[in-house]
Amino acid sequence: MSTVEVVVLQMSARAGDIAVNLDRFAELVLAHAGGADLVVAPELVTSGYDLDVLARRGRELAEPLDGPIAARVSELAKQVDATLVLGMLERHGHVLYDTAVAVAPDGRVLPYRKSHLYPTERELFAAGTELVVAPTPAGRLGMMICFEHAFPDVATALALRGAQVLVIPSAVPFGYEHLLTLRTRARAQDNQVFAVGANLAGNGFCGRSLVTDPRGEVLAEAGTEETVVRATLDLAAIEREREREPALRLRRPDLYRHGRR
Image 1 (cartoon, one colour):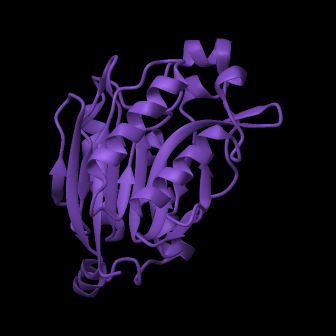
Image 2: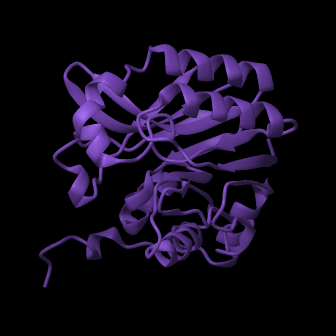
């Protein structure tokens, strides 16, 4: 696929109300995914991002990756013939993860567990132990979640593994919107890939979702309210930019090791 049509669902999510949130997600997918290859929704959009609520009710609200949430999203992906990415609260045994799933149109569920947790999340979630590049009909998706856009090494590792599009479900509050917008653009330009930041809106979250190209230029962006934005990604632009400035190819990782003098 040389071009990817991406839709970003900038949603609000009601804390602790999976039925309402999942119904709203399905409604937006059915209304806006026509002609799209990729649909991206925010972090923990099924449970809502409220750490107090999740501390009290997390094990009740969390589901395994073969649970009803994943099953419904798989059916949606088949119905609209698009890859769907969204954040969910995952339960694996007695452990909770802040997880993003990429669900392909053939029903495959490709999960990524947030590996770099914000300090307030560390007592609630376990950290994932691997980075994931999800192969999908919408391209090779480098999976990141929110705070992880602060780590250039994560995005570069994904790019070196072949990621074409960084997908970043997020829950960034007001007061931090400059980090969302700056870092999404920076991680795209650093690695000459596309990046899609899908942020929550309402309940203190700042929205400002955006899609950026391999030069870090903004292709589409949202305001602070619930909305849907759309952009077309020309995947051939990745190689064009890497020919113009072959930064990844000219890395010298032997100089970057910690402790060298």
